Length: 306
Image (cartoon, rainbow, N blue to C red; front, side, top):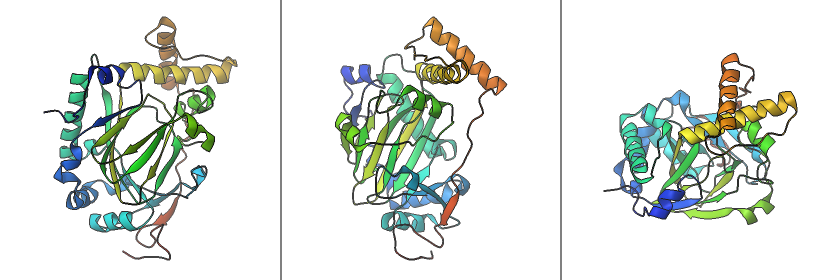
């Protein structure tokens, strides 16, 4: 029995190339009830737990702030997510907990079985636990992504990989890690976006590098973010990387070659050599910690001890 319940030949052909929605059954699994999530929060490496809060205006992406959870138990963190304005990001849970590794294996095996020629690598199954009305600002990801709604309702806007939504220089800066994945947003761009409401049992995927933003409904949200690469996606990332180097060092205006062209393969070699020689220094700036959930829960007035 498949996890996704509405595979069609058309969807299989367009997978990874278009904005698509699917029905799934992962939201029915006990691992995502309150006890299962609390256990996950207790067992996941605490030093890897992403804790964030944010402002209300979708244009003010610089209000995205980082915090820490200290030694709070999972049940308390879950309550804080339900009552405050926080976004808990558990990246690559499949690398740390065996049941999530097994889940990732199930999902990706099904994708590869259903999508002709698909071969996935660099798999990252993340769990997102977030507060009512929380948001993720306009940003893009280098890998391919699918977003699986488990609990609550969220709205996702997915935008084309083109001007004015994202220009080649902005895309190159993100791939080169000169800038963060979040960047300036114009609300007028919503007119050109695919707007999708995700409810439990729905999954959304979009083309590689497509900008997107997310707003939660007025309830606790739980989602799975599954990132991965394919040979073609990895090649595209390396071509963009090489284009960024060529633009900065030679002042040219290079294009992204689709598929496995001779010029594209040459750019892959350039990118790999540049990485080996460390010709491009990545911006490793990490957001400073500005709050601790043991003493303050953003979104709740005043300070709250655990």
